[in-house]
Image (cartoon, rainbow, N blue to C red; front, side):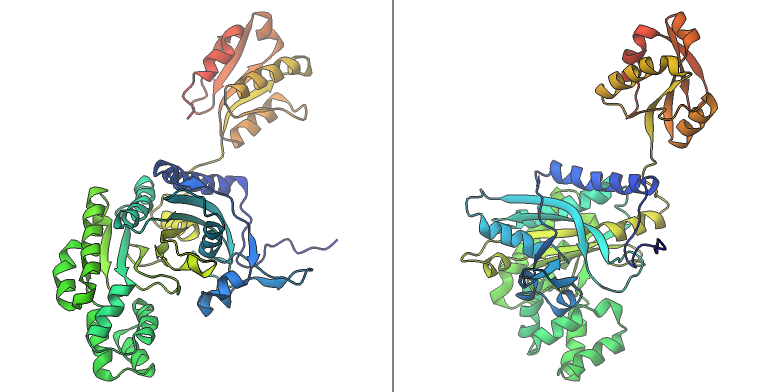
Length: 433
């Protein structure tokens, strides 16, 4: 059979040598989620299309891998997971709040493939449901920042924070009537020149004067607490409480020791229609890559799927763009494939003894391989080296006659003789991890 062996565009075949680093990155993200008290859950990978068509922008619905199943249901592979989680929360009214969930799984969107942007991609989601407080907002941002600290990328990543409701109110207070049209253009401001930004606003019905005012207002940016006075000055009285909330967020982020990674930016909007207040995105500090992740508060989305509103805040961690950043900083791969111990049997006559050693070492939690095809000494040693093995336990008749076995340190080539009865205790005590 003549089959095309290449993966589909935007999907990738990640072999074990590459996947080891991806797995390490996933472990770092999920370890952080556990430390912050988020609970791992397991959602479906296909859903009814209506979950997205009810509330999403065209940019998502147009990119869905959608189809009609054999039962006539309009189905989609999940393009992003927030509506799924909102559905699950609406379905279970007995859950104690705060509900803190996280997950890492695949998403699918048929979009242009660029560096850090795939059609099948891993995404990690952290969300807090049932709590409206600024403390919840601060915790999700702090959790995200902690991931980058663990990756030693805190100086290479900047978090841009805004409040959509605050931005809309400021625009209205300054006489900008076309706020919805303005927000759509503001969302793409960083991708345009000043001239293009003004032209786009005017094309959507704003006057030249109003367009220039929007441009000036959305230039407000910098450390959160340093921008509070300017925000107060330009915000109408009825939304001063949102300025207070932004100030409280800045103070909380200082307590988490992540404030230096965050700055306020009034031009951050986030394109998805369900965001109701806080929005934030993370970028590489040099601005060479796409957004590493984004999130915000979506207090009305759960209510779309039932009879109650549930406040919610969260973010989606982008694995692919983070890998690109790690590569750019020469910090990839994060980990190589490895084996703790390879049990090398010199002949078939000692195979059973070798298997006993392998079993006992695995019971101690070590990663252990053995010969599966009666290979010679040299072939086994070469294979162990290719698998990045730390120690090779050489089991041979001559050593066993003396109640001994030989252990080879693969990093140095040094060999040492172990008493047969002490092999397991010795290897289990090695600092492999």
